[in-house]
Amino acid sequence: GARHGPSLMPGGPAAAYERVRLILEAAAARINGEPCVTHLGTGSAGHYVKMVHNGIEYGLMQLIAETYDLMKRGLGMNAEALAAVYENWNQGELGSYLLEITAHIFRRTDEVKAGMPLIDMILDRARQKGTGKWAVSEAMELQVPTPTIDVAVMMRNLSGNPAARKAAEGMLLGPAAPFEGDAGRFIGGLGNALFNSFLGTYAQGMALLQSASAVYGYGLHLEAVARIWRGGCIIRAALLEDIRAAYQTSPDLPNLMLDPHIGREINLRQGDLRSVVRTAVDLGLPAPGLAASLAYFDACRSAWLPANLISAQRDYFGAHTYERIDAPGIFHTEWSKD
Ligand code: 3PG
Image (cartoon, rainbow, N blue to C red; front, side):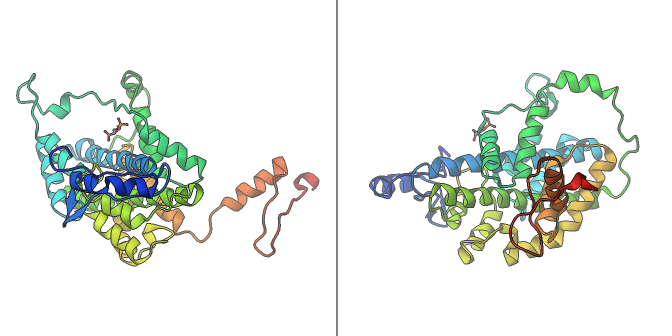
């Protein structure tokens, strides 16, 4: 960002932005001549967009970490082999800043223990400054589902006590059978699973922005958000071109996955996401980000969900009422009568 220009996410009064616009545009990163900055909206719109950017960042990082785990512990791959996979993925549709630095990380050797990959010397405890947590707590407040981002925060919390996990390792059992199958094929499917989960994470973040814009009156344009995230920020990715195009065509798209092009791409790869999650379960490797992304996809495409039972239970124990499918209004039943 310092050398090539950052993505800047300002909000506030439009007239104030106009006074500094040329300075910000000159400082910002540029993609195809377009500056990665724009006036996002009124009030705290800019800070809010940056907060959601970081929530998405947490989600993408957790997803990449799960692919690392599946290849390291699942397939037994070393740092060099892992670097090659991420370098390869970064050349294609998954191209992104986070995959680029992931490949670099696996290539770095330790200066203390010469020859050892540095990654293998780093403690498996991820800390946080809290912006992901803010995004999740805002999503809960506005009742917007962001499951991949939620579990990304949860897994950082869970990583926080390595000593307790070490103690539990010998006591709590998992499956004994190692990975069986074609490793090359699995890695291909893993890339597709990551692609779908990346898109699901952006979809969750964009849905949160859409809802916040309505609630707080920001006047956000999601096309502009996707446009300024294409360069100079941690979640910049080739995918953002498609995301931008989706909101350019339909500014009020209710969910990014409903864009015809993006929906087609996700449908093509959904089988691979399922099979990767199945493999993670079979191997006893935690992949809550991938699993949550799949559940988000499956729930969003479900015309029916078992929430009618939850409504009935609430009405049973608390007279909280329910709605019916065949008539408007609210209803209550005296459940314990018979
Ligand atoms: C950043 O550097 O962009 C983030 O602030 C990192 O946030 P974290 O410390 O919560 O991971």
